[in-house]
Length: 173
Image 1 (cartoon, helix red, strand yellow):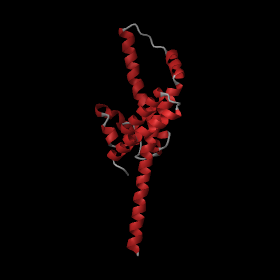
Image 2 (tube, one colour):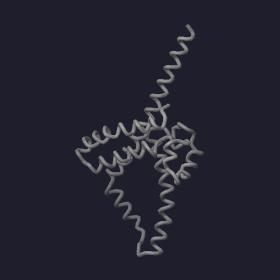
Image 3 (cartoon, one colour):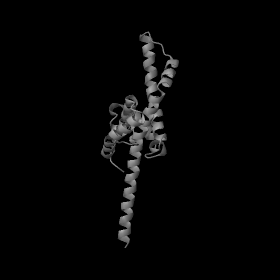
Image 4 (cartoon, helix red, strand yellow):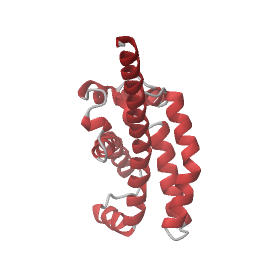
């Protein structure tokens, strides 16, 4: 299994490829390319599958790392819900959205008390619908960052398993 530094290198070296392919696939849409590339970078460095353990990604959250302690206590390392394709990213997004919604509810309440601001769910629904492709680009970038992590873990485990089998065969002769 690769170290945190190796995962970081994979993310950083893959970023130009991800950005270039996204730029071509989105018919040269620089906004969506930036969203995918930024989400890929964020996912690879801070929002990846290893948030389920005390890892480099976990430590990068700094003072906010406490947010991930319940996540770590709930999920087993490398479980389907942390390292599963699509489901892992979805679970992390739902988990983070829970915390952001708690903060948002308090912020909106304070803003309504102190200012001339009123909360409007319809406005949020309209914005979500208007920016559907951007939300998809965000999820794709986050998932691609997770996929690069998962693939490198699986490839590293496969290589180690092959090396162990070679050693076993050579010692049994």
